[in-house]
Length: 147
Image (tube, rainbow, N blue to C red):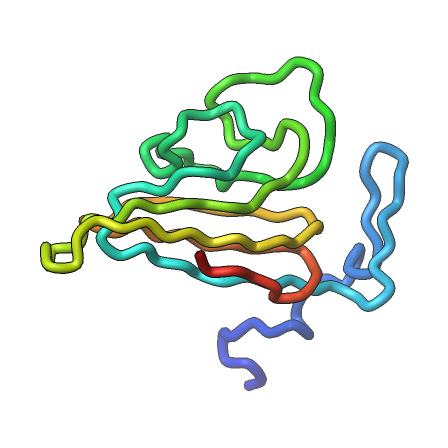
């Protein structure tokens, strides 16, 4: 009995894997489907701030969206507030303020920047005294900066 309930890439419907269409336009993927991503946890940070060009509140986790923040370059004339859809450019940069339990180190800031021009998604949530995030982009390289 092959696969025994497991699904791998050979079991996926291959339609639209090398090209997709939207609104009468075709987007080709000459090297096939690909994606890059990373999970980042900010320990001792109750929330993170950033991801500019979204019509949302400053605290990214406190917005509690079920959908991730979306990144792609566009220009929106009229937009809805408090939704994670992109507005203009894509600036995948966040900053965290850490309040560690060990008070000897004091309060400090850190950041993360993922300069990827592809369409991407960032999900943010808090769990206790840390903020977790996952970053996923449809293609590109893993070029990132820890601040």
